[in-house]
Length: 295
Image 1 (cartoon, rainbow, N blue to C red):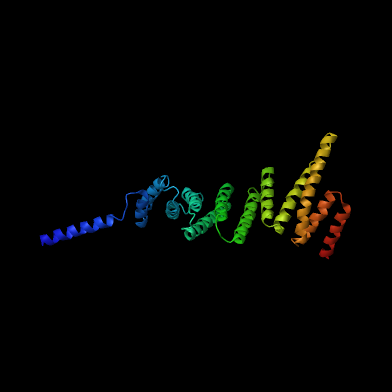
Image 2 (image 1 turned 45 degrees about the vertical axis):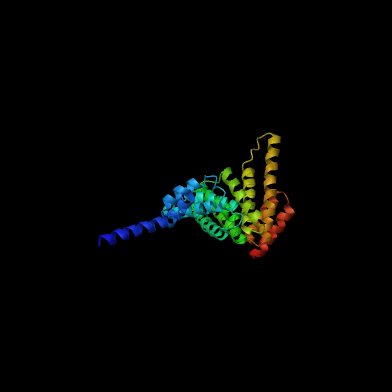
C-alpha cells in the first residue's frame, strides 16, 4: 500500500511538471494563464506590465488581451458607472490594436469589441442626459464617435445615432432651467448642434427650422432692447446686427418650408423674417399663403 501511494504521488508530480512546461516564463504567458483561469485582476497586472515592454508593445496579441481583459473587468466592476476608467482603457487598447494588427489577425474580435463598447458609451451618453449631466453625456458620446469612426459598422446607422443624440442634447440644454431664458453660451451651443446635424443631413427639416428660430429670436431680442438714446453710429451697428441675424435665419426657414415642416409655423416665420428685413412684398406673400391654408 505504501509503495502504491509513493508511486501515485510521484506520477502526479511528473504530470504537474509536464503541464508546467507549457507556461513560459514571460508576462504574456502569465496573462494567458490567469485569463484562462478567469483571474482577471492577475491577468490585468501582467498585461499592464507586458504592454510597456519593448518585445510586446508592437504585438497585436498584447493589445487584444488588454482589450478583452479590461472589457471583462469593466463588465464586472464598472458597468453601472457613467464614467468608467476601465472602459476608457479598452478604447485606448483597441486603437493601439488596430494600429499594430497589420495582418488583421484579430479583425473579427476587434469589430465585436468595438460594437459592444461603443454601444455602452452611446447608452450612457443618453442616460447622462436624463440626469442631466451634459458634460458627462458629451464625453461618452465623443468616445462613441471615436470608436465607431474606426469600425466598419453601418455608417448610415451611425449617422442616425449621432443625429438622434444631438437632438436629445439640444433638448437637454433647452430645458436645463425652464424658468429662465437661454443665455448666450447656451444659444451658441444650440446653434453648433443644429449646424453639426445639418453637416450630416442638409435635408433635416427640424434642424433647419430650429436653427432659423435661434437666429430670428436673437434678432427680435436685440430689436426689442434697442436703446434709441444711443449715439447714431452705435444705433446703426445694432440695426446691422439685427439685419444680419434675420438674414442668417432666412435660408433655414425657407428650407424648412420647402420640406413641408410645421408649415403654418414656417410660413409665420417667413412672414416675420421678411418683415424684419423690410421686405414687405415677400412678407405679404407668405402672410397670404398662411391665410390660404388656414381657411
